[in-house]
Amino acid sequence: MLLTITTTARPATDLGRLLRKHPDRVQSFEQTFGTAWVCYPEAGEERCTAALLLEVDAARLARSHARASGDATLKQYVNDRPYAASSLLAVALGKVFSTARTGVSEERPELAAAAMPLEIALPAVPCTGGPRLVRDLFEPLGWEVRAEAVPLPGFDADSRHVSVRLRGEVRLSDALSHLYVLLPVLDDAKHYWVDIGEVDKLVRSGGEWLAAHPLRGLIAGRYLAHRKSYERAAFARLEEVAEAVESGADIAEDADTAEQSLPLHRIRIGAVMDALAASGAASVLDLGCGSGKLLAALLDDPRYTRITGADVSSRALGMAERALRLDRMGERQRQRLQLVQGSVVYRDKRFAGFDAAVLMEVIEHLDPGRLPAMERVVFGDARPRTVVVTTPNAEFNARYGLGAHEMRHADHRFEWGQDRFAAWAEGVAARYGYRVRIEGVGTVDPEAGTPTQMGVFDRA
Image 1 (cartoon, one colour):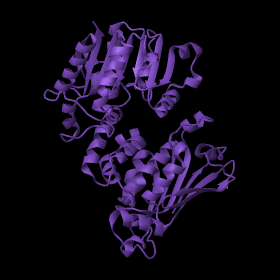
Image 2 (cartoon, helix red, strand yellow):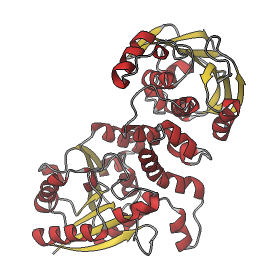
Image 3 (cartoon, one colour):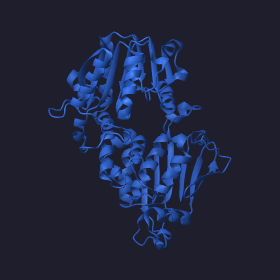
Image 4 (cartoon, helix red, strand yellow):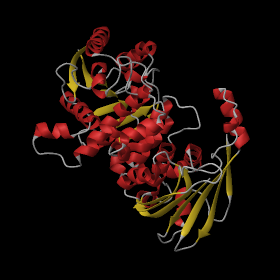
């Protein structure tokens, strides 16, 4: 199976820089089901084409599938998988071009961030829905689409396969994410096991373009192999992004309307910032800082002279560093900020001495048995004057279409209703000498309350 990506942006060989694959070399990448090859049929100043060729080992793939499914029939050996661009190509693309998919380039950040003229060709794609579905999926993303039915000799009497050519002015990382998500959707089949982790892949790869797509229901359903519980989890995760996309970038002047137009994560950050401002804090510790969204808001407010972001994940800290552009940050601003790797369940001297600490959407990622350790570290050892904690309100999950025992994120270990959160917060406050007030964050539902609940702890 074959995929080619062509650009005419001068110098066209910059395509190699973004893909992190040199035009002068042929490179191979072993996959569990075969070998992926990257080469450049043409590489000049005015035009450059990168080709991803996937050589599928049909026997190896069939043996692994037979072990997993118990199906050892002949169709596992005689099929279109070696020839047509399916979910196998999406897997190879995701691994081979993993850096390019992030949209980050340390060498040429401005190049990675810019749209460029691209032409993508796929000679044969299995498509349940035909050429029209290809157009319906890719045209809303800004592509000019040419799709034609192409019977695959020996396999395809009903012309299920389609030749696809896409042309547009698109960021390369966006183009790769479109292909990574939509190739399995076109086929409506995945040639590997689908579990709850696929929800994370879908949301991470789709982002805003998926949340705004008119066929996002069909995309999620096919990508997640029509597992209804996974679909509901994906919709809950996409809800915040969809609110931002559908409401547009403009914020209404009226305060009530403005709050309704904001996505939940921005409303949550606003609520945390209000609580910190009311506390009079000048130094803030963001525990579980993730990609740095709260840190960015803190840096924009000059009242905070000392800001530290801590996370157990080095990958998350790297994302925060790139998002905050530490390498280009002015010296005065840089002196206000520190990023440290550390766990909220282990005593750490670096956590002490702050006016306020924030755990924004953190506690639900801890096993319930680790909560007492977190309480000792934050409220007992670090002991800031103010602690702000936010967490999902499980009673609101039904408004996202989730079942009684389903959670919003695959990594959540628990989600509490309003009474359970209040009981925990009041118990922590009593044990460690704090007072606590509980507030709702987000749109109020008369029965379910708000999507997020917040506890603001002040040391007695």
